[in-house]
Image (cartoon, rainbow, N blue to C red; front, side, top):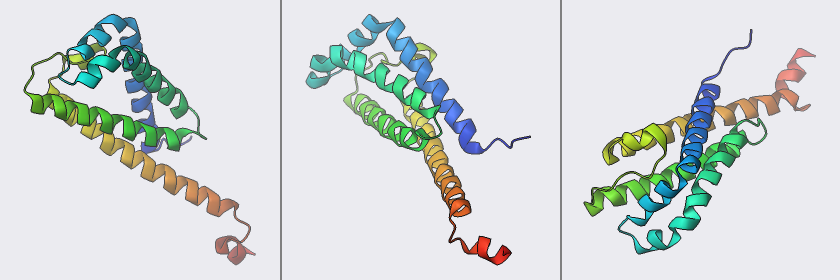
Length: 156
């Protein structure tokens, strides 16, 4: 029986998170764009219609890329970049003092801004753990395939 690694569990959580939020944003697209237009940043108001498509498409692409062993590591890096972008936005909302609704999709939109900040920080930490474990498993797989590997020579 194959042992499930922590990085696989984390990857599954990210797939669920990004697929769920992307689908929620697509299903309630007009509300998502409307709420972005309420943000106190002029640039966000102007870019809301474009971001209304870019954000969920990006989330969906990351979720799909996480399904591929070959693309998983880069998808985890993109996950961190996206979550840090969301963290900056959330921090800006908290600092602005505006009590605006969250633009996230689904049940996640029920969280307060502070809860979002903690939730995203937790997922950033999880992504860092998964990235570290993926790098370690790749380097050990590379060592096993390297014909110059000293471990293999000692068996001869």
